[in-house]
Length: 208
Image (cartoon, rainbow, N blue to C red; front, side):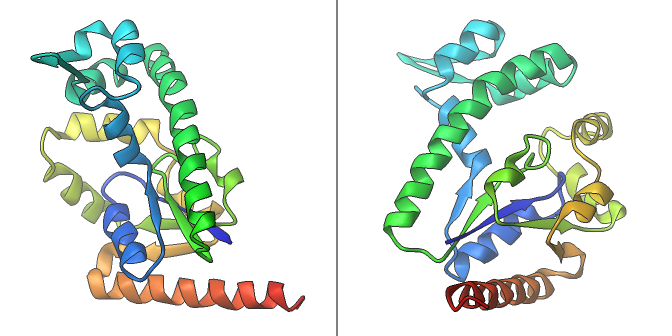
């Protein structure tokens, strides 16, 4: 089984690219979705995060969850707090990914994908066979980001500071999906990547 690590900086088109992989039969582990679940109503990490960041805890009747906007406002201003949060989240996401991978193995998928925004930053590429970086021109990236809810220029620039540069990610990648030319162009690139990986896989099976 080939494990693809899919990553890209904010607003580069990674989520759409992940959906393309999924639509052509490659199952995708969505790290962001996993985090949402862990912080969501009665999620596994709600008690641990609430202990360190009590101001981020919200309640609906007897249900507790973490307000991600409040949490984000805390950690983006403080590197120490950010590391504390990462030390809570990353190990649990790793456990969830391991369980998901075991499921995918039982299903006998030949190629799977880990959608991880901070793949390089967390050294997640070590768990992958191939890395796909989604990229777009910086102007398009900025335009996309500023259209998002609760996003402004200051927050966007702060997020960029916490991420490895797009240029460095491209250098470290095995494949690049350029998302700046529309959906169809991106889909063609993903399909070509899958074809190449199947060829690699066939070569390995035959000892080539």
